[in-house]
Amino acid sequence: MPSAFRRDVRRAGRPLLAAVLGALGLSLPLAGTAPAAESTLDRLKAQGFARIAIANEPPYTQITPDGKVTGAGPELAREVLKRLGVPELEASVSEYGAMIPGLQARRFDLVDAGLFMKPERCRAVAYSEPDLCDAEAFAVKKGNPKHLMTYADLKTDGVKVGVPGGGSEERLSLQAGVPRDRVIVAPDGQSGLKMLEDGRIDAYSLPTLSIRDLLQKAGDAGLEIVTPIKDAPISCAGAAFNKQDTELRDAYDRVLAEMKKSGEFAKIIEPFGFPAEAAMVTTREQLCGGKN
Ligand code: 6CS
Image (tube, rainbow, N blue to C red):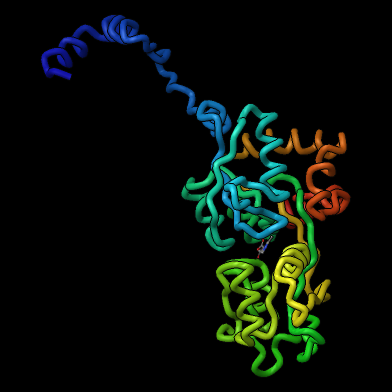
């Protein structure tokens, strides 16, 4: 803006500014009132899509060979957001350990990938009410030669366990006392199974529905599932949002509650193997151990 013009505007004050902005189709904010910050929901509506983080771990989340984003999490989120006026989802694959930092840095608008609610996670993000619940499981060699039934059993000398980076199973293994150097991060399900088949790990741990899906697709008769893992809780996830986005989270919860009541929630998640009832008999407050 030429300096002379800037000086004129300053000298002429508000009326001229209003006139100029008016000519530019812009309006002056009322004196003393800063323009209301656009809410995240408004921004998503305006851009027509939401950026969702997924892990490509069926049946929670999956990208099909033709690039479609599906799985219980994205299908549910897509329907809820559509009802909130946000028609599309744009997905990016992320490790579980990178999902919360990605929300905090606003690289994603939400996560609906089965990110289980744990008090420390509840302190970092704003969760919806529960949606996907599951027990923990191991994939082991046929006959379970090392009798690995619990996370505590993984402490047995020399036993190595494969886990997703930053995932609950990594935390459960370390909390059970398995030495760090025997808790091996596998970048994805296929790599975890391969490490087990090659004998580089003795167990690969993920939630039950994920291990079942992997074994069913691998079709390797030399592997079997151990579930439920008795010294691990049943976990429930919810959609996760940036801690500031409570308005968006609350709007999401309102639609989710309607869909739970109408049966549509069950219609979406049960074909993927998730029990709707489990997510309706518990609450975020219970899972977070307090308000979130
Ligand atoms: O929330 C988690 O940490 C876990 N959730 C799923 C669905 N898979 C593995 C991950 O560790």
